[in-house]
Image (tube, rainbow, N blue to C red; front, side, top):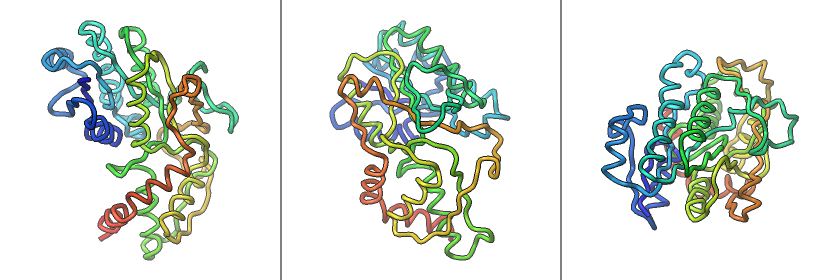
Length: 299
């Protein structure tokens, strides 16, 4: 199978490229090679390579920056998916579009989980732009999967776990005056991008279409997740829990980001484990690399 992956230098894109290249022909795409919001160049590039599947991992994910950089957010998160969807319809490839928990408002009481059938109501510009991308894909593509995930982490790039490790090391070295506060009233499921890449591989062999939720099993708060990760890393820390109101951000984040993988479970093709099991494997595989990177950032 020939698979074209947009956003190939991001967390999920890199893991998809590495995993899928083992059994498929993979075309890794990223700017400036391809701009998914430029319809003419996009169509030309895809027509040239004639993929069977396009996996759209490209997104503008700077959640707080989306509040002020609205044009760029909507260009990448909404216009780009719309153009990909139209290209999918015209050129006949399957489109797997990666979306987010931020399409929900988080008002569902935790630990209840959002299903694929629940109504969306994004609270942030990031969430609104991603929902617009979903709607465009559903409207224009004929063979598609909208894959909603949440709380991604990877050994590549920037993410919450790497930030917590860096801050814990800085605090341990006496570089932080007031310790590290972590939000303890937002709920979700830390999801390893490598496991999500494996799930995408399983989806390629299925005939599932439409919206699909794909996150790790179980749930935690950000504080609980950070504490568990640092424990597995063997890092002493002085994290303290705080409320969302005590840690204000420009973008409004959902209080409940727990997603139920209902369709994957019903189809019997879910590869997800409890989030703590994946953290254990993540640390076992990458502990030294993570520490070297974190310590280098403090030097």
